[in-house]
Amino acid sequence: MKKKALLRSICGLAFGIALGQLIAIVISVVKGDGMFHAVVPELISDWGTELNAVIVQAVLLGVLGTVLGAASVIWDFDSWSLTKQTTTHFCLFAFPFTIVAYVLYWIPRSVGGVMASTVVFIAIYAAIWCGSYFSYKRKVKQINDELHKG
Image (cartoon, rainbow, N blue to C red):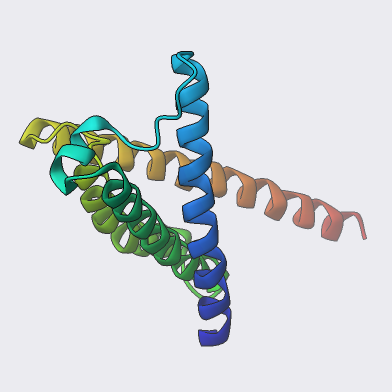
């Protein structure tokens, strides 16, 4: 399991950085001014230069991808309940995500902004839990139906 977590974290590192670039490209296209907007202006102000801001963003997104990649092994723990898997994954990912989102100005820098982000995060994880629960329930029903036919 450790090897799987390590491999997934390495893939997550690359995925996090690549996703950050893709988001920057999409935002730049949507803005439609012909410029590439690698980071928000506030981040440049915080770090002094655009290059420093881009490096900070890439590192943070790489770390976030690494955490998410490593945490994905939780879904492979078949002996754990869906609730335990979802709660553990949430705890491992929500805190680092909130810090990164705060530093990169993805959320407003206020208690209300952090709280709103947390509520959205909880809603997303609740949706993941519900989707997984009903998917598993349907699979169990299909298996039971097949057993009763035979």
